[in-house]
Length: 453
Ligand code: FAD
Image 1 (cartoon, rainbow, N blue to C red):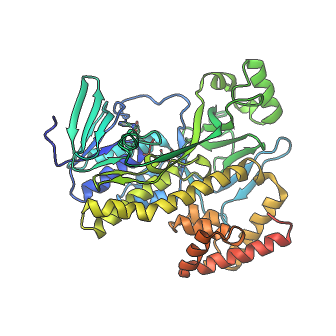
Image 2 (image 1 turned 180 degrees about the vertical axis):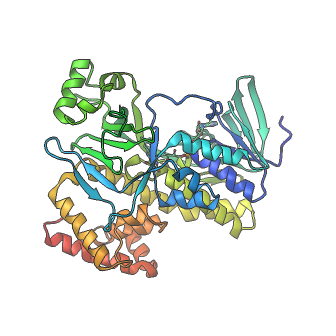
Image 3 (image 1 turned 90 degrees about the vertical axis):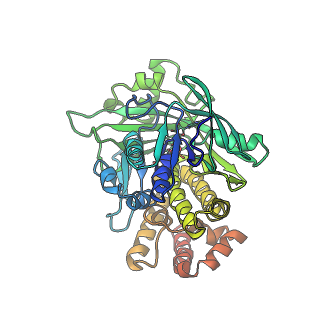
């Protein structure tokens, strides 16, 4: 039995867990940070597992609060819009903001994780424990069981926080004790990573854009890396006649890409090898009705609310969770029994809002970005942003370039058309943002004038 009874246990030294350890240590707590893997700072990157991600304002806001934003942003590559690649013809650039000055940032997931881990590790009171896989948890006593290379060990903590990702073992334990129920909605789609290496030492595509190949039933995106390569992610159904499983020979792979992604082929010399050897990742939305038990065990990040990656917000929202939990602890005087339910009350509807927006963005990215009507709609949005600076803000801007409540960002688009009771309540309650919501309403009128969304 571990004698460190007063340490708060954070399970999972991923993005949310490491950031959380930093915030808790700043509050004067002692933290044991348990991670099932070896120290990532000494290990190698797993092949074909999302090596970069888009960091935007919600994530940056959290990093600023611990003084890590500059270090992380030093290697970031700003992407000011989407570059749409049609099957034939020239790519078209669609700016994310009216003035073209706002960017989301492509960063290395591994470098971000390592920076956060080193920041946590450097703080007095944080004790990382690698090679510790949580396999058991008694939510009443806080006793945890870990598998380690030396065998099973136990430890007890006054508070256990599950930041252990979409397949959370902490959530699984709460489920086994009947303390929550969960729903896992997997998409029929999976993803596979491919690489565009540097061309003559330079980026083979414009590094200031997120590249999108919208193909209706499939989609590929590419984000730039600091080494001047791009990581492409192909989203396609996992099974069926046209699916990730349907290309079984090098010739079939080459034929498929030559037909549907012809401009990629000369830029990806390892295409066949990548396709055949990189794993297929699954995509889904995790929801659970309770994010805490007894004020003693809590969930955050993907463990509480994993979402599909099409709005680029999963990590950003996991970081935002940490900021909100810190705020709840402030307001509750570090009383966990009060803070954990307050955290759930504040964040759960926002998590649901981004889950819905992320699913809707999949349809937008794989299909609608290429349509003239969508492009007209973006032009109208940008015209309104220019005409009504600060009063009209598009949903994309609210989500990616602000820390506005995500429920409001969802309502700002859904209000006019869906008008569900929740949307209306949010819109009405958000008096200070009502201009945004109402101008969106007017934007929809204008959009419908030009042919409907
Ligand atoms: P994770 O990052 O999954 O970390 C969980 C940690 O817990 C890991 O270190 C894991 O090893 C550890 N762990 C798991 N089980 C145990 C256990 N039993 N015991 C101990 N430790 C354990 N988000 C964005 O914001 N922008 C993007 O552009 C973006 N792109 C994405 C692209 C793809 C293809 C995918 C799949 C996701 C993307 N995301 C993006 C989402 C983002 O990766 C996640 O939301 C984010 O990683 C969640 O962080 P987390 O710390 O909650 O979980």
